[in-house]
Image 1 (tube, rainbow, N blue to C red):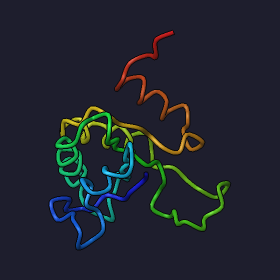
Image 2 (cartoon, one colour; image 1 turned 180 degrees about the vertical axis):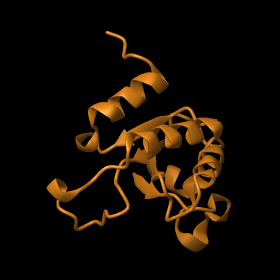
Image 3 (cartoon, rainbow, N blue to C red; image 1 turned 60 degrees about the vertical axis):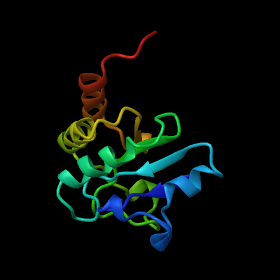
Length: 129
């Protein structure tokens, strides 16, 4: 199941439909979207979200860092989508690491440039063969 993060995750619960404990009763895993700007919030908000998610088992919750730029909307055609700069991805990954979350993903892969791949390699190392 995929769900959006709130900029103040401590407020999650029944009142805003993001009670992760309740969702995890029915879903085997939650993919929580943690886009770079989190609705215009400072990068520190991503640290807070990552830290909040560490209360859940790492095999049940994955923080997904979105590459979409600020001009993205759900009706934007794929070919018109733009990505955040590689430096912004690096900052987001560092923020998530500061939040001590270990289970991360980056989406969508079709927006990954060579520079984005370099950031992943520098951050996470080379994939094992």
